[in-house]
Length: 274
Image 1 (cartoon, rainbow, N blue to C red):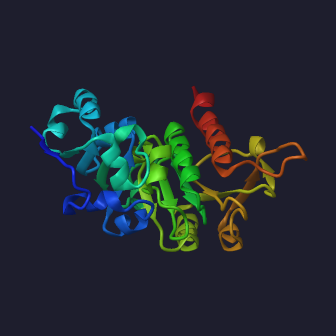
Image 2: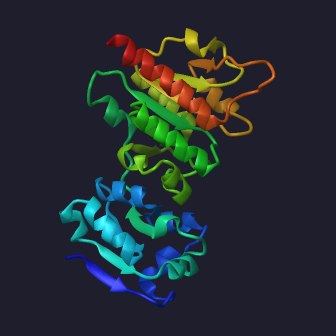
Image 3: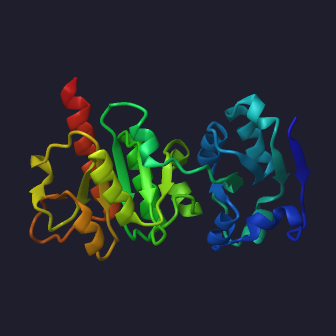
């Protein structure tokens, strides 16, 4: 049986991680993150992610018990409280009345994936991408279209921000992540040492998306929501590719652009080869 605790005091030390409110970066410095919502928490519990504890209501707990493997459920620390208590503790209305505290998994370096097989690999890198909601959707797109790795850098939003996890619908738990300390150095190494094509998704790119052949190993680079890919990162790109649009539209939202790029890559590599 899991360890179930009925709580009514927001000052309990064991509930401290849930009191971070919007300051999730502090929680991540300790190596943890929060997952929110029934489906997201269920997917976390069905993955290899270590779950430290769960905060929810008794009603949601009954649902959760039916949705996750018995062996995972029995090892959990679960805190039970009324829905109003959850909101008072966390500082906002908790989606579907459930939060889980998870441990951020170890990084997966890109070279370890490249060494695994001779298959064509697809990496996605973010350059100064700030919005965790956008990042969460991008992660969902990556998982839907068979990306092998997400590469982030210090100025980009973390894949383990609560809103990024929520908008990924828990797909972040199945997508390997690598936190690069220098995106330009990481991309340069992929280009020169591993012959990976670095593809910049850029509205002023040289090649239309439908004319580009996405073969071999690829790293797709997505830029900042306002300014796009930085000049330093553009200099490392082997190709810049754009999505043709009507002249009255400047560009797509980065998450939408990612979906279009990833669909085209998936179509070329998977659907057209059947």
